Image (cartoon, rainbow, N blue to C red; front, side, top):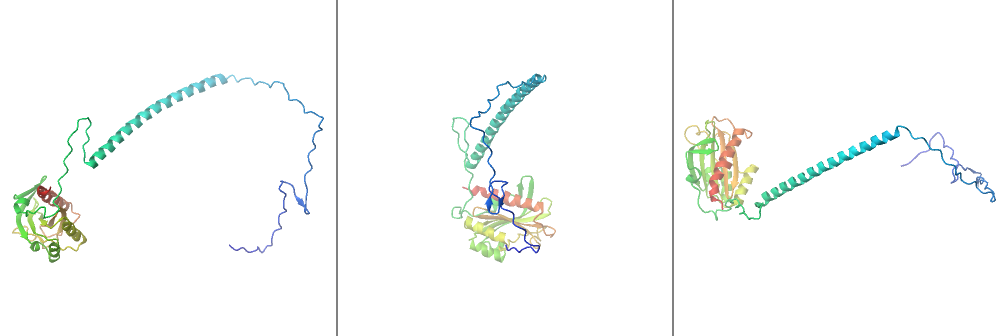
Length: 301
């Protein structure tokens, strides 16, 4: 950083000082202070005084005060000892509970049941895995397997079945864009049905797509999620479902092994359904993740 000289002139330099404080330098010569005179060597210093120091009379309140302080200290030590015992008990209890929780979490994570006594116990059997390919699961889907009755019951909800069909080759159950993706995944068949809600306000076509393997099912799901997968067509029948698919619908879907499960949901009166509609979410949960997946679990290994 550059500096400029002040227009008011340069102040005179401060007079230099010697390293000893308070000693000025005059005309280039250093003035030293005069040394203090030393006592004559033959004069001995006076001996220290041996007179006893005066004793201060004790305050008459000092003895009770000391006793009160002593009692207060004993009480505080007692409270501190009790507090230490309580904190130790709490710490031991907390350590025991934390260890139990961590041990419990490890058991759940490992899928093992650790016995609490020396007697060994049988481990739980692992959950069945969905079939990963049509080669390992060659049996075709059937209408009776997926829709065995006239009503689908999930928990307390009942969904009457109004139409069922099996579509070999898959193209007739999908739009042109979706049909191309199904062909790429070696789709063998789609089994689907149209159901109603109990109040007949909503209708849905639900189906299972039989693909070559789980990779093809996952790829189809990703294409649908990206918005480039086209659409599945609705299965219409006489009555209140005759207009299903002719107005906006909502598509819910999931995968289970080499299958893709889906539901095309519409409002019977033709109003467009909303993805945020809680009844639409309930239909997807009941029909796709509930009914269809439960029917396919018999194929798990």
